[in-house]
Image 1 (cartoon, rainbow, N blue to C red):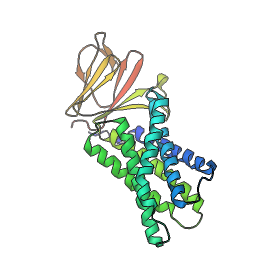
Image 2: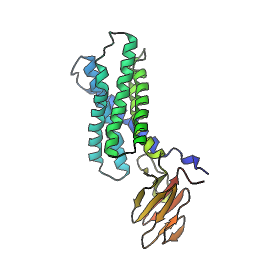
Image 3: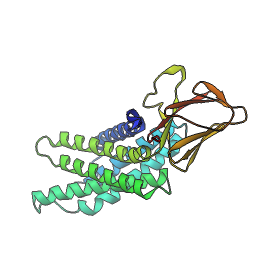
Length: 276
């Protein structure tokens, strides 16, 4: 029976939230930047660069914070990759001006922000996984492009332009976060979650998850998990581990939503596609 409660890992929501938060920071920065140019094209390029950099820094920095990694390096890398990707993706279409017609302007904005999101996700994915599965990478880029296109449409809505631009940028950042975190987790055979102490539920900043794909292994302290045809095998160290409340010293198959204690750390293995 499929564990439907875990079909959408919480890490997807976490990535989306931090993408949106990064876009909010980028939007605020745009309001305080000095007016360097009066060119709409240059202003749009500055917006793509600033928001892309803020979103990339927020997503990768928060990810490394949760994984107990190098937050500073990842935030800087995310800022550079996200900003450059968004700028490179948007720039070819930002030179088309609204003077042509409102329809052309709408198409230009839609294409520009769609490509900005797709290019940004492509660059950030290269940092996270230099050799990703092609199917997951295509899906990630496609999701980003669709989300970016929607933000481009929102960007051009009539009325209170400042409000619509803010909404568009927030949607753009959330779409990048969703596209970056979604395919990585929901295509895994299982998601391994580090459990907080004292039975508390993990917050957005404390949530630690790792995807485990078929025919791959994952090291948990001195223990190791291996996925074989949708089943998860646990290989304990010489001293053994606690799995589902039982002390084991030999390799064994785990059940869906199994809990494993390795040393002072506890993990929950959530099978997304258990064998029937």
